[in-house]
Image 1 (cartoon, rainbow, N blue to C red):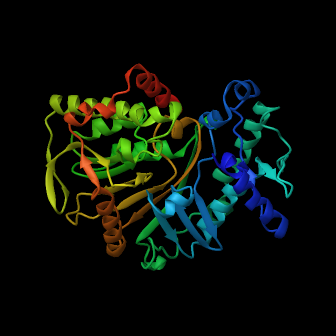
Image 2: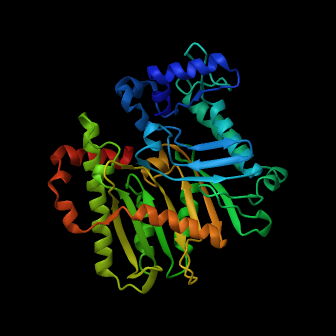
Image 3: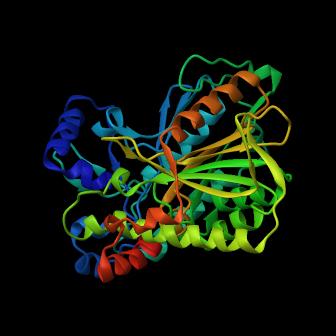
Length: 402
């Protein structure tokens, strides 16, 4: 997607102008080795990205890190809901993420001042030698992910200061907040995101609550199984885009079927949770300070007139009686098959006992769910949700590719 955006005429002109005027500007365009020459010939150019992209959204400024799931196109600054967390003066984290970005960039094509793509720094073409490309990229990432003891000690310090969406400062010396990064590159066998999330869901104590957001609800079988199993003694609130808040809503051609396809996948997931609820006896637990509910899964759709929904992440509440989040997960993953297996994803786990930060995290989830409409069976009877065989076909494609 980034390559497509950069090579569009207007965007390409802006970047070429920047390259020509400032030698400090570098543009690297990643191409997955899974996009073989044969697939490239078969697939239309606008569908190439379904094979896999670099999906990370990491912004590093000196010793500051802005983590998000946003692509930062114009709609994200006007009417597209997303999340942003700023971590200030965290030099170790900034260095690590900068090395991660540089590693991926070294295996990416370079856009030159004339607007042409040049060979990557390592000199290995993903089109010509995909097997060698995968091997060398994995080796480079392993050097980053499996460091020496010196490197490890450098990159395992707590962030000095954390600033959540501006205005909140924490004293890192108190060790009340821990931040650690994970990545996911399934095509290379790197599954940090998945392993950490599944471990967390399995080990959360009974009566914990988890708020979860995904713009495109297409959960992997493992994730779905963990949610359903965990719902026996835990609460889950999930928010996703309504068809009208899906970024593909109103698109022409096959893209226009995507919101209906996701609605069908959402219906399948909803029915699974209902079946599980009918078969199990749930404990009573507190969802948050304003209401009580039975343990289980509640599903919501984001509906805000004129807005689309792109937020993703998790907020975990331990049963400590305070009813504020203890942990949040923010990054690029939508927790679906594509995030698991096709794309390059990066996330941050933020674990805290600091009351001010926990309050701000609660305000964030309250804001998102304030536009959430709870899903019931009648929702799926809406004629706008039907698309016939084409939508069913699109749903099958979405399950594995989008």
